Amino acid sequence: MRIVVFGTGGAGGYFGAQLTRAEADVVFVARGDHLRAIRTHGLCIETPAGETAFRPTLATDDPTRIGKADVVLLGVKAWQVTEAAEAIRPMLGPKTFVVPLQNGVEAASQLAAALGAEHVLGGLCGTLSWVTAPGRIRSVSAGNFIKFAELDNRPSDRAEQLRHLFERAGVNVEVPSDIHKALWEKFLLITSFGGVGAVTRAPLGVIRTIPETRRLLEECMQEVFAVARARRVALADTVVADTMRHIDSLAAKGTTSLQRDIADGKPSELEFWNGAVVRLAREVDVATPLNEFIYRCLLPQDMHARGKVKLSP
Image (cartoon, rainbow, N blue to C red; front, top):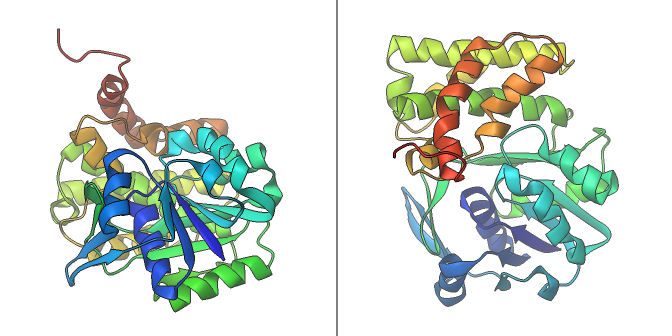
């Protein structure tokens, strides 16, 4: 299978690199200094166990050079999904399918609207990984995973073929029976962890230890749970307790990309995390005061990063 990693950041880069272990035909789409470093030295993945350089079949910033792909792992930021769909078109053959890795619950429907539902699977991943320098990604968690499935939850050969490839690469992979449930389970985790982390500017180990901030996490999760239930997503009654147990298992130094982008003055995925909680809640008349508070508090920093407002004279 020819696998194209479109957006070789923390998530796309980490999982794309692992696929090279299975001797897959992997292409990285990147740009600038990051691309030049990958071409020269390969993509270096740093973990607590050490570091390894992975060399793709091809690294490029020009999708028209790639030809037809079997699978596209989409690793761009959430606000770039629609633009990326147009860039993917030259790689799209009759059987090509795209697996979005963005945090959130809207990327698959955006891709389906642009490319056709037959070319899209629902997808999500879990990894505490980020780019530390051109050509280098740090991953601090042993609990990395990827999940994907057909949008209508039917079994398919293409999902199974990709699952087997990830298994050969040693990746924790699953084809869930209900991809929308899986997406919302991740959404409940990441919006709460990301939003509280960005507001408190503390790593996960601190947030989960202080009773007040731990309670904030739980209450944010309860709001997302209420929105999911109102939208007829089949989350379990125990999802908040289960997610908090998962939170307790994650690396203490962990932060989310939202928190890091806000702290670094970069554009963030705020609109697609806590902003999406608020927007989707309004559609089903559910109150989400904590997520709305987080969203409004972080909005000035995100707008400043996008050049829409100035925070100082």
